[in-house]
Length: 555
Image 1 (cartoon, rainbow, N blue to C red):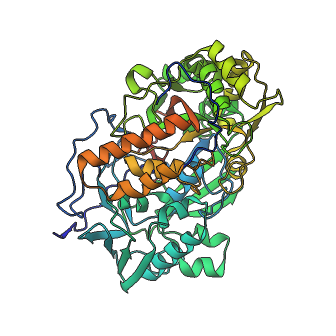
Image 2 (image 1 turned 30 degrees about the vertical axis):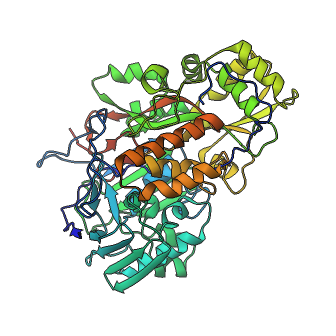
Image 3 (image 1 turned 180 degrees about the vertical axis):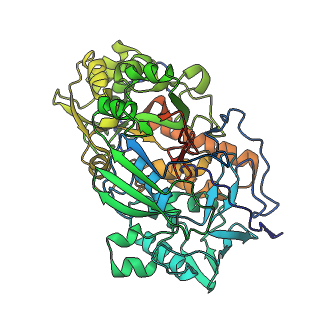
């Protein structure tokens, strides 16, 4: 039975992040651990067939963390500065360095995409006013006919086709991960697009509902392969950009949606944490990310500021390069897992997070609120004696093992170094900025042995693992390749039987627990400090933040 969703008024909130394989490790002679681990979203849109399984929503979805819109008569500042703790290296979704928190936030400011996902799991119209599917395999998208790019070109299916086909060429990028599921695409007319998949895919909308599926302007990119990526259909245009320094946005008064209240916004990267706090206190910025934890109480108790927080769905993990001769060994990974005290690691790292509780979350690699958590999987226990046994059985010979991480993870390197030294494991540290880290640890050419990274897990069970564990995925920085898991990743999206779907998803979690390409450590808490009169931006449990409708009310 075919159903359609007609165009709804645009709900302008944050899109959720999206979002394997025989173990590369050596299990020929492992030490046996004493405690070894041997459906569509709840709000299925009416655009999908009525045969889709109905499931209850997760019970632990946190409340929305929004700052409200301005009062109608409020006097607003024309400009807002947001201090960032991560630089934007390049504005190019097809670059290996074209990802990271504030790079993605930049995409949200200047681009639009076909569909966006509400935090309740439902999908809402964006550039696609509506869509249809009768069988989950053939999808028809009806494109808005009133959208213009920043260069004045009118959006048509020609631009959408160009975006999809170009993305499929960029293997290893986040854009590729989204568009690879669209093998057969054709324009029915100027504003109607058909995407035919190789097989039914219940979860397909998850792959066209993120900023990385931004629709690009064909003419702009053909004329300028560098700055063509700056031309979008979002509410803001790029007014200035300096690599790892700042991004300046100017409101596009011809934007097809509701106009933002602020005329211009700057994302300013400040690498020194204490400087961020000083600038915010001095009124040089209205919002700051990455304020040192030691200084948060000063802002929390100051009536001139507000602290906004949200616990993330992603797991911050210690990850291993599974193709490395040492880290690819199962005993080595078990040694590290047995030597990590999660609570003290988080405390020593200086990161704002919550150690993952085994009692509440078990030992699985899974999103905090993602459905189908397999609670039968135990966590590898903290046991230094057992850790030394594992290490002795591994190929580790005392040569230092490199641990790479982003500087935004604070003292995670020193904290891990201290813990692993207790079992005689020598770790050298390699901190770097976000763009450098992304390039250094890419699937195509990962130079790291061990690394700290978020295991990117959205609220959709199958697409989360697609992003993090499928061979070739840009987020699979472990170079993890397990054929059984790969087969399940291909199978699960087409399953509509609830019981079968759950059984297969449980098995996915068992596989990653057995192979352990990464060790989940903590849930990060994203936070921002804002001047009291700031409103209109959003933090959620995804990796994205929405600054499109931010405002600052003048006294």
